[in-house]
Image (cartoon, rainbow, N blue to C red; front, side, top):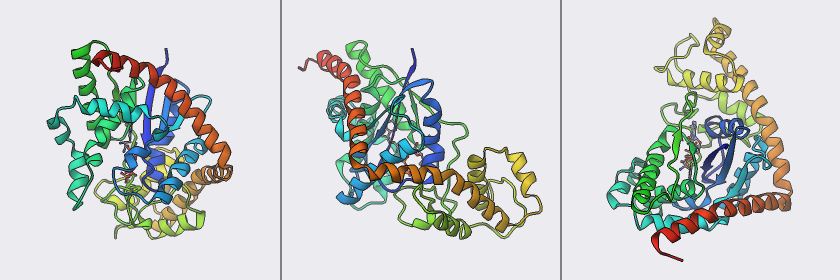
Length: 326
Ligand code: ATP
Ligand code: LTN
Protein backbone atom coordinates (compact mmCIF):
# COMPACT_ATOMS: atom_id res chain seq x y z
CA UNK A 1 0.00 0.00 0.00
CA UNK A 2 1.12 3.52 -0.79
CA UNK A 3 2.21 5.71 2.12
CA UNK A 4 -0.27 8.35 3.22
CA UNK A 5 1.26 11.84 3.18
CA UNK A 6 -0.30 14.99 4.62
CA UNK A 7 0.99 18.53 4.46
CA UNK A 8 -0.33 22.05 4.36
CA UNK A 9 0.48 25.72 4.05
CA UNK A 10 -1.32 28.59 5.74
CA UNK A 11 -2.91 31.21 3.47
CA UNK A 12 -1.38 33.86 5.72
CA UNK A 13 0.02 36.00 2.90
CA UNK A 14 1.28 35.74 -0.65
CA UNK A 15 3.29 32.61 -1.37
CA UNK A 16 7.04 33.11 -1.87
CA UNK A 17 9.81 31.19 -3.58
CA UNK A 18 10.89 29.70 -0.19
CA UNK A 19 7.47 28.05 0.17
CA UNK A 20 7.78 26.71 -3.35
CA UNK A 21 11.37 25.44 -3.09
CA UNK A 22 11.02 24.26 0.52
CA UNK A 23 7.60 22.62 0.30
CA UNK A 24 5.45 22.50 -2.84
CA UNK A 25 8.25 21.39 -5.16
CA UNK A 26 8.88 18.37 -2.92
CA UNK A 27 5.17 17.58 -2.76
CA UNK A 28 4.96 17.43 -6.54
CA UNK A 29 7.76 14.87 -6.51
CA UNK A 30 6.17 12.69 -3.82
CA UNK A 31 2.65 12.54 -5.21
CA UNK A 32 3.42 9.73 -7.69
CA UNK A 33 4.70 7.35 -5.05
CA UNK A 34 2.31 8.20 -2.24
CA UNK A 35 -1.32 8.74 -1.37
CA UNK A 36 -1.10 12.45 -0.64
CA UNK A 37 -3.34 15.10 0.86
CA UNK A 38 -2.34 18.74 0.44
CA UNK A 39 -4.33 21.21 2.42
CA UNK A 40 -4.82 24.98 2.45
CA UNK A 41 -4.83 25.35 6.24
CA UNK A 42 -7.03 28.42 6.53
CA UNK A 43 -8.11 27.68 10.13
CA UNK A 44 -4.46 27.95 11.09
CA UNK A 45 -4.20 31.31 9.33
CA UNK A 46 -6.91 32.81 11.55
CA UNK A 47 -4.87 32.15 14.70
CA UNK A 48 -3.55 35.65 13.97
CA UNK A 49 -5.73 38.56 12.76
CA UNK A 50 -6.59 38.46 9.05
CA UNK A 51 -8.40 40.86 6.77
CA UNK A 52 -11.43 38.87 5.50
CA UNK A 53 -11.08 39.96 1.86
CA UNK A 54 -7.36 39.33 1.79
CA UNK A 55 -7.77 35.97 3.50
CA UNK A 56 -10.37 34.90 0.95
CA UNK A 57 -8.05 35.93 -1.87
CA UNK A 58 -5.04 34.20 -0.27
CA UNK A 59 -6.96 30.93 0.13
CA UNK A 60 -7.88 30.88 -3.56
CA UNK A 61 -4.44 31.97 -4.69
CA UNK A 62 -2.69 29.34 -2.59
CA UNK A 63 -4.95 26.60 -3.96
CA UNK A 64 -4.40 27.85 -7.53
CA UNK A 65 -0.62 27.79 -6.98
CA UNK A 66 -0.77 24.21 -5.66
CA UNK A 67 -2.41 23.14 -8.92
CA UNK A 68 -0.29 25.41 -11.12
CA UNK A 69 2.93 24.10 -9.56
CA UNK A 70 1.99 20.56 -10.55
CA UNK A 71 -0.10 19.06 -7.77
CA UNK A 72 -2.43 16.86 -9.76
CA UNK A 73 -5.99 16.56 -8.39
CA UNK A 74 -6.24 13.10 -9.95
CA UNK A 75 -3.27 11.89 -7.94
CA UNK A 76 -3.56 13.94 -4.75
CA UNK A 77 -6.37 15.24 -2.57
CA UNK A 78 -6.24 19.04 -2.53
CA UNK A 79 -8.65 20.87 -0.26
CA UNK A 80 -9.33 23.77 2.06
CA UNK A 81 -9.22 22.86 5.76
CA UNK A 82 -12.35 24.81 6.78
CA UNK A 83 -14.39 22.85 4.23
CA UNK A 84 -13.75 19.67 6.20
CA UNK A 85 -15.34 20.26 9.64
CA UNK A 86 -13.78 17.08 11.04
CA UNK A 87 -10.49 19.00 11.48
CA UNK A 88 -12.03 21.31 14.09
CA UNK A 89 -14.02 18.49 15.62
CA UNK A 90 -10.99 16.29 16.17
CA UNK A 91 -8.93 19.28 17.35
CA UNK A 92 -11.48 19.87 20.11
CA UNK A 93 -11.39 16.26 21.20
CA UNK A 94 -7.58 16.26 21.23
CA UNK A 95 -7.66 19.49 23.28
CA UNK A 96 -9.40 17.60 26.02
CA UNK A 97 -6.56 15.09 26.24
CA UNK A 98 -3.40 17.15 25.68
CA UNK A 99 -1.69 18.10 28.94
CA UNK A 100 -1.21 21.87 29.21
CA UNK A 101 2.51 21.41 29.85
CA UNK A 102 3.06 19.77 26.47
CA UNK A 103 1.59 22.79 24.70
CA UNK A 104 3.54 25.24 26.84
CA UNK A 105 6.78 23.80 25.49
CA UNK A 106 6.01 24.70 21.86
CA UNK A 107 8.69 27.09 20.62
CA UNK A 108 6.66 28.48 17.70
CA UNK A 109 4.05 29.75 20.15
CA UNK A 110 6.72 31.22 22.39
CA UNK A 111 8.30 33.05 19.42
CA UNK A 112 5.05 34.24 17.90
CA UNK A 113 3.44 35.35 21.15
CA UNK A 114 6.58 37.10 22.45
CA UNK A 115 6.32 39.62 19.60
CA UNK A 116 2.69 40.49 20.38
CA UNK A 117 0.88 42.47 23.07
CA UNK A 118 -2.23 40.36 22.57
CA UNK A 119 -2.77 36.98 21.05
CA UNK A 120 -5.62 34.51 20.79
CA UNK A 121 -6.09 31.15 22.45
CA UNK A 122 -6.10 29.84 18.87
CA UNK A 123 -2.45 30.81 18.48
CA UNK A 124 -1.63 28.78 21.58
CA UNK A 125 -3.78 25.90 20.38
CA UNK A 126 -2.35 25.89 16.84
CA UNK A 127 -0.42 22.60 17.39
CA UNK A 128 -3.60 20.75 18.47
CA UNK A 129 -5.28 21.65 15.19
CA UNK A 130 -2.16 20.60 13.32
CA UNK A 131 -2.19 17.27 15.19
CA UNK A 132 -5.84 16.83 14.17
CA UNK A 133 -4.96 17.54 10.50
CA UNK A 134 -2.39 14.78 10.57
CA UNK A 135 -4.12 12.16 12.72
CA UNK A 136 -7.48 12.48 10.98
CA UNK A 137 -6.09 10.75 7.88
CA UNK A 138 -4.00 8.04 9.59
CA UNK A 139 -1.00 9.74 8.03
CA UNK A 140 2.32 7.91 7.67
CA UNK A 141 4.57 10.84 6.81
CA UNK A 142 4.44 14.61 7.14
CA UNK A 143 6.79 16.63 4.93
CA UNK A 144 7.54 19.87 6.76
CA UNK A 145 10.35 22.36 7.35
CA UNK A 146 12.65 21.94 10.35
CA UNK A 147 10.64 24.58 12.28
CA UNK A 148 7.57 22.30 12.28
CA UNK A 149 9.34 19.19 13.57
CA UNK A 150 8.38 19.92 17.17
CA UNK A 151 4.69 20.05 16.18
CA UNK A 152 4.90 16.67 14.44
CA UNK A 153 6.66 15.22 17.48
CA UNK A 154 3.88 16.55 19.68
CA UNK A 155 1.40 14.92 17.30
CA UNK A 156 3.19 11.59 17.79
CA UNK A 157 3.08 11.99 21.56
CA UNK A 158 -0.65 12.76 21.46
CA UNK A 159 -1.34 9.74 19.24
CA UNK A 160 0.74 7.44 21.46
CA UNK A 161 -1.00 8.71 24.59
CA UNK A 162 -4.47 8.11 23.14
CA UNK A 163 -3.50 4.73 21.70
CA UNK A 164 -2.14 3.63 25.06
CA UNK A 165 -5.44 4.55 26.72
CA UNK A 166 -7.90 3.32 24.10
CA UNK A 167 -6.12 0.87 21.80
CA UNK A 168 -5.16 1.37 18.21
CA UNK A 169 -6.92 4.63 17.30
CA UNK A 170 -4.23 6.58 15.40
CA UNK A 171 -1.32 5.78 13.12
CA UNK A 172 1.91 7.29 14.49
CA UNK A 173 3.18 9.76 11.86
CA UNK A 174 6.81 10.47 10.95
CA UNK A 175 8.12 13.95 10.17
CA UNK A 176 9.98 14.15 6.85
CA UNK A 177 12.42 17.04 6.77
CA UNK A 178 13.96 17.55 3.31
CA UNK A 179 17.76 17.25 3.41
CA UNK A 180 18.19 19.79 0.65
CA UNK A 181 15.40 21.92 2.03
CA UNK A 182 17.57 24.94 2.53
CA UNK A 183 15.97 27.83 4.34
CA UNK A 184 15.57 30.65 1.89
CA UNK A 185 16.44 33.90 3.59
CA UNK A 186 15.18 37.46 3.08
CA UNK A 187 16.62 39.35 0.12
CA UNK A 188 16.78 42.58 2.10
CA UNK A 189 18.09 40.88 5.25
CA UNK A 190 19.67 37.44 4.80
CA UNK A 191 19.72 36.83 8.55
CA UNK A 192 15.92 36.38 8.70
CA UNK A 193 13.90 33.87 6.70
CA UNK A 194 11.71 34.75 3.79
CA UNK A 195 8.17 34.58 5.23
CA UNK A 196 4.63 35.05 3.97
CA UNK A 197 3.75 37.18 6.92
CA UNK A 198 6.77 39.49 6.49
CA UNK A 199 5.49 42.98 5.92
CA UNK A 200 8.30 44.11 3.62
CA UNK A 201 7.61 43.10 -0.02
CA UNK A 202 11.32 43.65 -0.78
CA UNK A 203 12.15 40.68 1.48
CA UNK A 204 10.53 38.02 -0.66
CA UNK A 205 10.23 36.88 -4.25
CA UNK A 206 6.54 36.07 -4.54
CA UNK A 207 5.33 33.35 -6.90
CA UNK A 208 2.94 35.86 -8.46
CA UNK A 209 5.62 38.57 -8.96
CA UNK A 210 6.03 39.74 -12.57
CA UNK A 211 9.53 39.36 -14.11
CA UNK A 212 10.35 43.08 -13.84
CA UNK A 213 9.50 43.04 -10.13
CA UNK A 214 11.70 39.97 -9.61
CA UNK A 215 14.52 41.70 -11.46
CA UNK A 216 14.31 44.80 -9.25
CA UNK A 217 14.13 42.81 -6.03
CA UNK A 218 17.16 40.69 -6.92
CA UNK A 219 19.10 43.75 -8.09
CA UNK A 220 18.58 45.32 -4.66
CA UNK A 221 19.32 42.15 -2.69
CA UNK A 222 21.88 42.51 0.09
CA UNK A 223 25.33 41.07 -0.67
CA UNK A 224 28.68 42.05 0.90
CA UNK A 225 31.89 43.87 0.04
CA UNK A 226 33.87 40.79 -1.00
CA UNK A 227 34.39 39.75 -4.58
CA UNK A 228 34.53 35.94 -4.76
CA UNK A 229 31.25 34.18 -5.57
CA UNK A 230 31.11 31.00 -3.50
CA UNK A 231 28.85 29.13 -1.06
CA UNK A 232 29.83 30.36 2.40
CA UNK A 233 27.55 30.35 5.44
CA UNK A 234 29.47 33.31 6.82
CA UNK A 235 28.41 35.42 3.87
CA UNK A 236 24.64 35.01 4.20
CA UNK A 237 23.58 37.36 1.37
CA UNK A 238 25.63 35.76 -1.40
CA UNK A 239 25.08 32.31 0.05
CA UNK A 240 21.31 32.83 -0.12
CA UNK A 241 21.39 34.03 -3.73
CA UNK A 242 23.53 31.06 -4.70
CA UNK A 243 21.20 28.67 -2.87
CA UNK A 244 18.19 30.00 -4.78
CA UNK A 245 20.22 29.71 -7.98
CA UNK A 246 21.16 26.12 -7.13
CA UNK A 247 17.59 25.04 -6.36
CA UNK A 248 16.16 26.73 -9.47
CA UNK A 249 18.88 25.58 -11.88
CA UNK A 250 19.38 22.07 -10.50
CA UNK A 251 23.17 22.47 -10.87
CA UNK A 252 25.69 21.33 -8.26
CA UNK A 253 27.46 23.75 -5.93
CA UNK A 254 30.79 22.87 -7.55
CA UNK A 255 29.53 23.63 -11.06
CA UNK A 256 27.96 26.87 -9.89
CA UNK A 257 31.12 28.08 -8.20
CA UNK A 258 33.16 27.19 -11.30
CA UNK A 259 30.64 28.99 -13.51
CA UNK A 260 30.80 32.21 -11.49
CA UNK A 261 34.56 32.20 -10.98
CA UNK A 262 35.97 35.61 -11.89
CA UNK A 263 32.48 37.05 -12.41
CA UNK A 264 30.85 39.87 -10.51
CA UNK A 265 27.83 40.14 -8.26
CA UNK A 266 25.99 41.91 -11.08
CA UNK A 267 26.49 38.77 -13.25
CA UNK A 268 25.20 36.54 -10.45
CA UNK A 269 22.14 38.75 -10.00
CA UNK A 270 21.40 38.84 -13.73
CA UNK A 271 21.70 35.08 -14.15
CA UNK A 272 19.78 34.44 -10.96
CA UNK A 273 16.96 36.64 -12.25
CA UNK A 274 16.85 34.54 -15.44
CA UNK A 275 16.60 31.18 -13.65
CA UNK A 276 14.02 32.46 -11.15
CA UNK A 277 11.88 34.01 -13.88
CA UNK A 278 12.11 30.78 -15.92
CA UNK A 279 11.01 28.76 -12.90
CA UNK A 280 8.17 31.00 -11.74
CA UNK A 281 6.67 32.31 -14.98
CA UNK A 282 4.86 29.09 -16.00
CA UNK A 283 3.49 28.71 -12.46
CA UNK A 284 2.30 32.34 -12.30
CA UNK A 285 0.69 32.12 -15.74
CA UNK A 286 -1.09 28.86 -14.96
CA UNK A 287 -2.25 30.11 -11.54
CA UNK A 288 -3.61 33.28 -13.16
CA UNK A 289 -5.56 31.14 -15.62
CA UNK A 290 -6.94 28.94 -12.84
CA UNK A 291 -7.97 31.98 -10.76
CA UNK A 292 -9.95 33.41 -13.68
CA UNK A 293 -12.36 30.49 -13.73
CA UNK A 294 -13.84 30.86 -10.26
CA UNK A 295 -16.38 28.10 -10.63
CA UNK A 296 -13.89 25.53 -11.90
CA UNK A 297 -11.55 26.22 -8.96
CA UNK A 298 -14.43 26.06 -6.45
CA UNK A 299 -15.52 22.75 -7.95
CA UNK A 300 -12.04 21.27 -7.77
CA UNK A 301 -11.73 22.29 -4.11
CA UNK A 302 -15.18 21.01 -3.27
CA UNK A 303 -14.34 17.66 -4.83
CA UNK A 304 -11.13 17.58 -2.80
CA UNK A 305 -13.04 18.39 0.39
CA UNK A 306 -15.58 15.63 -0.28
CA UNK A 307 -12.81 13.13 -0.85
CA UNK A 308 -11.07 14.27 2.34
CA UNK A 309 -14.30 13.97 4.35
CA UNK A 310 -14.70 10.43 3.11
CA UNK A 311 -11.21 9.61 4.35
CA UNK A 312 -11.73 11.43 7.67
CA UNK A 313 -15.02 9.75 8.57
CA UNK A 314 -13.66 6.34 9.67
CA UNK A 315 -11.14 8.00 11.99
CA UNK A 316 -13.81 10.22 13.54
CA UNK A 317 -16.04 7.19 14.11
CA UNK A 318 -13.16 5.28 15.65
CA UNK A 319 -12.17 8.14 17.97
CA UNK A 320 -15.74 8.81 19.09
CA UNK A 321 -16.44 5.16 19.71
CA UNK A 322 -13.16 4.79 21.64
CA UNK A 323 -13.88 7.64 24.05
CA UNK A 324 -17.59 6.95 24.41
CA UNK A 325 -19.15 9.65 22.22
CA UNK A 326 -21.70 9.26 19.46
P1 ATP B 1 4.29 32.56 7.93
O1 ATP B 1 5.07 33.84 7.78
O2 ATP B 1 2.81 32.74 7.86
O3 ATP B 1 4.76 31.71 9.10
P2 ATP B 1 5.92 31.10 6.07
O4 ATP B 1 6.25 31.72 4.76
O5 ATP B 1 6.99 31.13 7.12
O6 ATP B 1 4.60 31.75 6.63
P3 ATP B 1 4.75 28.49 6.51
O7 ATP B 1 3.28 28.55 6.25
O8 ATP B 1 5.21 28.49 7.94
O9 ATP B 1 5.48 29.64 5.71
O10 ATP B 1 5.36 27.23 5.80
C1 ATP B 1 4.86 26.61 4.66
C2 ATP B 1 5.93 25.67 4.11
O11 ATP B 1 6.94 26.43 3.46
C3 ATP B 1 6.63 24.85 5.20
O12 ATP B 1 6.84 23.54 4.72
C4 ATP B 1 7.93 25.57 5.40
O13 ATP B 1 8.96 24.72 5.85
C5 ATP B 1 8.20 26.13 4.01
N1 ATP B 1 8.95 27.40 4.12
C6 ATP B 1 8.49 28.54 4.66
N2 ATP B 1 9.40 29.51 4.58
C7 ATP B 1 10.49 28.96 4.00
C8 ATP B 1 11.77 29.45 3.64
N3 ATP B 1 12.10 30.70 3.87
N4 ATP B 1 12.63 28.60 3.03
C9 ATP B 1 12.28 27.33 2.78
N5 ATP B 1 11.09 26.80 3.09
C10 ATP B 1 10.20 27.59 3.69
N1 LTN C 1 2.14 24.57 10.66
C1 LTN C 1 2.47 24.24 9.29
C2 LTN C 1 1.25 24.21 8.43
C3 LTN C 1 0.42 23.04 8.76
C4 LTN C 1 0.77 21.67 8.53
C5 LTN C 1 -0.33 20.91 9.03
C6 LTN C 1 1.88 21.06 7.97
C7 LTN C 1 -0.79 23.02 9.37
N2 LTN C 1 -1.24 21.76 9.51
C8 LTN C 1 -0.29 19.53 8.98
C9 LTN C 1 1.88 19.66 7.93
C10 LTN C 1 0.83 18.91 8.43
C11 LTN C 1 3.48 25.21 8.73
O1 LTN C 1 4.19 24.84 7.88
N3 LTN C 1 3.54 26.40 9.17
